Length: 538
Image 1 (cartoon, one colour):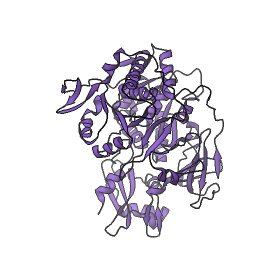
Image 2 (cartoon, one colour):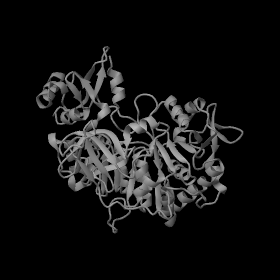
Image 3 (cartoon, rainbow, N blue to C red):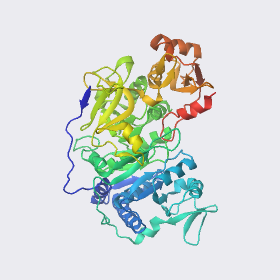
């Protein structure tokens, strides 16, 4: 079955304006409005932010950033991180983010593999830079401000941590540059950036994105078409290197402002929602549950919220229903990938769309997106039949960086094999089962962890869970489950096995149960199954 989104908006090919240029134009058009509130409470106006970013772009051009070069960002959740990304884009360079939570060795491999010409470091990541720099040979390393952690400086004015010189303050160096866009011509087929997957072995795959497809996301009004709605106030409480950065882009372009937090803390998020009158929030399901379970949730004024977006991993239908009761009809579910950007969306009024086994839909394909469900031999499957999810749209990646072999495996005739398993219903709503590569091979067949997780989340003794495979000495896989008990409950393996066996069959029943105070999460807020697997291997 193939489902097509409609109403795709064409991009003006006569004068291409990149997304960074478009965002900066929007900011400069109303210079006095509040654009950013930093984690320290500093307010930055749109005009000041745009001027600083234009100056930084000119400085980066002077230091070798150009079309075909790579500017790599070792940054946290800061205004400087946003400015650096836009400035590098205005200079024509492709942008790479070095994610928090990866080892210095992995970061070094990424930095080298993408041919980094300029490495920019902000104060949030100076400690990581001290570990990274001895492992790489980058032509130009610069800091985004002096930073509060500076312990000394070199004779050239470079920031130093201990005995490790990091680089010159490029923000200070750019102060004399013009506060206007650099004269750099950028086309829709130029590289915008390289995003890396959260690979569990070896170096993560680099996903090439182009300016044209990303620019198309700005053709629709963010948050809906209501012209009378006040501009959005987005709370960036998750990493700006991931989806929070994309939503910040859309917020700026639509005339809104961004409130930044260094990291996700449920109490601080709730306090910021009330204090800053936040309208838009993005969370992964485990973070949504943390908000629901926080003792301040009942006394927090949530009336300003217009949109609480969630996605990225499986969500508990019962907890989503609880979230709707707490936050109101403002939940929006999204499904997408770095390889394809946004694929489908489930609007607030569609959250009663339930599939077999009580599973929540991830919505219908977005305008301009085609979704097909196929069998392993490539045959398209009818509605209701589960298979591999394939996507075709203008926003599908250009390919994997320097890996034509991997690109050929997933891209054929414009169609991307997402690696996800799922099905479409008769009305074109999409339901996900799991990642095909995450399946656990057991005697009698294979188990998709998400299917078991969604079932276990209906068990009265289980509040949260993560299902994963663990190999024994003979390389046979076994189903393990880590659970966080519901208040006052103590799940037992025999009971959980019987619960799963009765509803899905013996093959799906976990062989081991690990009761934890909390499920460990990756840097982007997803259950860290690699850590769980390594902890319980053997």
